[in-house]
Image 1 (cartoon, rainbow, N blue to C red):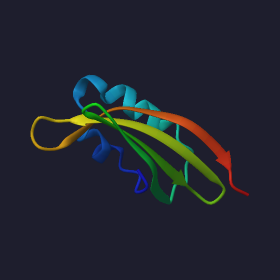
Image 2 (tube, rainbow, N blue to C red):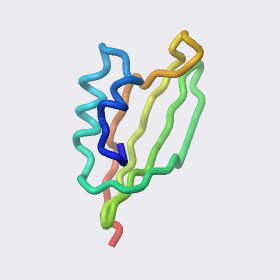
Image 3 (spheres, rainbow, N blue to C red):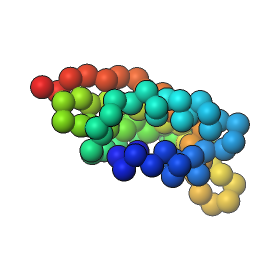
Image 4 (spheres, rainbow, N blue to C red):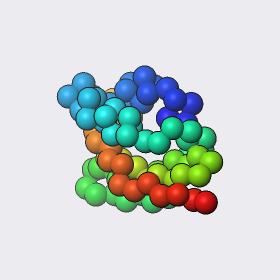
Length: 88
C-alpha cells in the first residue's frame, strides 16, 4: 500500500472479497509513506490487525481481518478504513 501497489494486496485477498477490500484501500488519502501495525487480536482462528498508514499531514487506521488460507498462509478477507486524521 505504501508503494501504491494495490495489485500486490489483491494477491492476498480471495476473489469474493477482492472488490470490497480494494474499495476500502482506494479511500485512503494519497501520499502514504509509512505503515505500522498498531494492534493485533486473535478471534478464534481469525486475526484482526489495525495498521496505521501515514503521510506528510494525514494518518489513517485500517482494520484488517485475516483468516488461515488452508495452504499454511493467511488471506485478507476484509479491510475497513476506520479513521483518518490530520497530524499537523
